[in-house]
Image 1: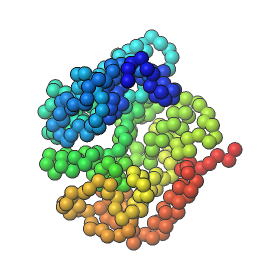
Image 2 (image 1 turned 135 degrees about the horizontal axis):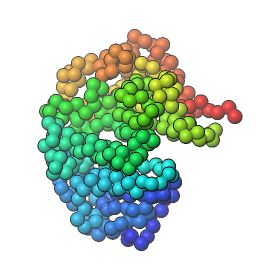
Image 3 (image 1 turned 90 degrees about the vertical axis):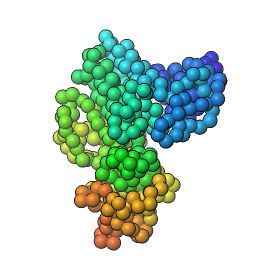
Image 4 (image 1 turned 135 degrees about the vertical axis):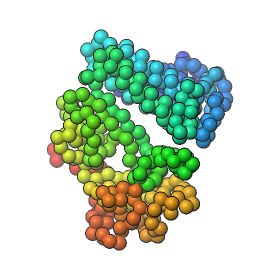
Length: 347
């Protein structure tokens, strides 16, 4: 692999004008990619530098650029994003920046100046560093005159890794909050993620909504916001949530399907969540965890939870509401058979 050879089917082949980044933090090649070229040819075998102080690098073997440092990835990405925003100053052309972070995903490698900043160990320090990254992006927007006319959306991809159990027991820090479950789980803690929108004069400052929302709704919502008409068959799982964002309406999404592993599903509608599997666990739950957290022992083939009164999904109501269970299963079958959650267009 050399910098002279283009990388096929990358971001530039899918609508982006520019790209800068690595692959993902724990997959090769461990080097920077700029647009559709490798910036520095990876000529050395991967060595974790520095070694994470919490967990492991979780790194797949492969080629690495000489001198590659895991703790330099986020600072470099942050500076690149900030510099790119500054480069747009003076232009009246709208821009779109997609900035997917490598933190706080493993390897957990806060830089030296962030170590010891929190009481939650290296992961907590890495989270604090991530907060700084968000602040740097917002500061760059403000300093370059974009703060008042730019939509900023912050979200994440799933719940925390299995290390969260140890942090909760040893440091009193619950990455999953009040919710049950972690990454890979069907429970709420595996799928509920932060979703924050900053849109001055449109989204009310400090407002909070409990409306049902999916990241897939971004497509239809932003299309509506800019007045773009979507082709009839596009975005089959995207609902326009603009009025929900504005605080002038409720969620347009009737339900949400949770899935990580083949054959195991959960569906949320209103205040009800049905985990249609003997367990919502995709990650091993430590011995004694359920008892210590007030979760009922359960040997039912599925579980029904009222999220309004039981957000921690501690009490299975499966046998008490068979009509709700039947309706949720029927709705899931309809979604599965149609291959879409948004009704098909009639035109």
